[in-house]
Image (tube, rainbow, N blue to C red; front, top):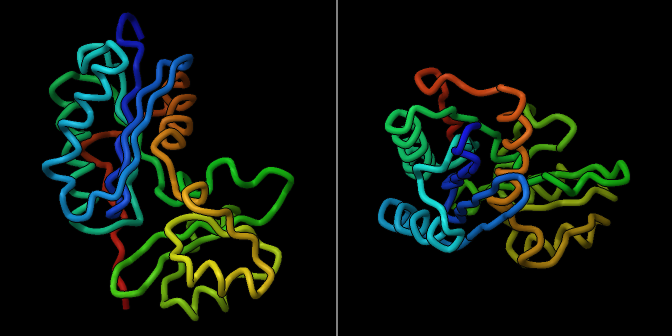
Length: 212
């Protein structure tokens, strides 16, 4: 890693976005509701977070980015920023599933965990931690009917959806604990960077949400 000891994580998969910095010892993150303002908000927040940690992009040795499922505009912002940094600084890129970020840390004790992402127009995308490639989508009732009793459900879940899931026997952590965190993206990417498991910037593609 030389003197570039920091990893920068960027997640703009949906309106709920975040950034994080870590060098394996120190951690900093920022998560917020960005609406449709990722384009103008994310870059200044990266600079602010780097300043807070007394570092700069010149000391970042790898970029992690959430690759979806997510919105078309949101993922374009994140992937464009990440690939721009990678090409300008000649550093590695690591893509991580947004559903993996969502469920990270919640599977302790063997509990089945379902991660949920908002898809807009009162629709959701979800998958179980044990099979994140088996992505489902639908409205609130379809989500509630799909998740088995006793499962832990995390992610972008409104209070009425949380109440419906709880009524079926699911465990839903309170806000904001159930929201995905950019720190989780950084934590998932960090060991991959150390192991040299990086992605080709030219080949890495986002996973878009396409509601039926």
